[in-house]
Image 1 (spheres, each protein chain N blue to C red):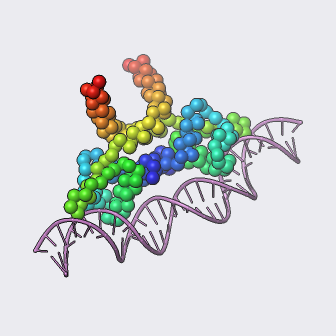
Image 2 (image 1 turned 90 degrees about the horizontal axis):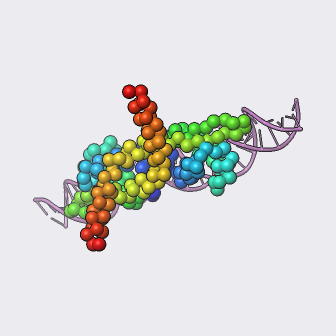
Image 3 (image 1 turned 30 degrees about the vertical axis):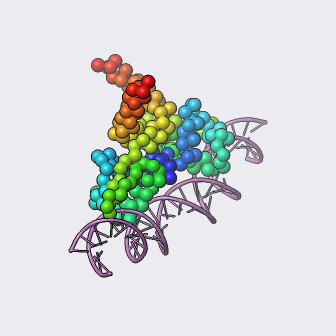
Length: 100
Length: 100
DNA sequence: AATATATATGCGTTGACAGTTATATTTCCC
DNA sequence: GGGAAATATAACTGTCAACGCATATATATT
């Protein structure tokens, strides 16, 4: 599953947001999400396959960790578009300054 | 359809890439894509509903135009993640400099 | 008005995905 | 070893998206 596809699902974006605060065992993620345990587990699998998270075993727990480097793919794709709204912003700012 | 969902589909990303060069009639997009005309038309509809493109009529043609501002949503979502790989890059650069 | 061109929509099929419940697997503790 | 806890997988169901083909709609041309 590509990062783009992985991010299409809101629950998966939420999982990544949760992991931004630091690595967490799957159980905590389940508790934080409004989803069944298997549901969360499947989303985590999708994120794993997209390379967006990694897991490490700690006893019977699985500690999930954000792999943000993979999001750089998105950033790269986005790059040639960025100047479009950057230009607009520049124009807006110029306009606002002119009006001051 | 959210921008995230819209971007999950490779053909739709390709359509956006094509529109980066400037606005184009639907027919040109069909010619450039390896898809049926109705197929392209449906993807364009999805992009329209996601706010990522706009259309204007010119005779019997429909001229499509990139609405890149909507991609700023993506950029905003990405923002809190950016420092993750930026940090990694800094570390890598420092490492490379040290080795020079 | 009839025909052609450009584009969109309807329909049917197929495959993928998200959600559930139930069950398997692994590890821990007694 | 036996049971509990943590997590993953299996099996099933309902929904939705993508594709192709056929058709409708709108505009232009003669």
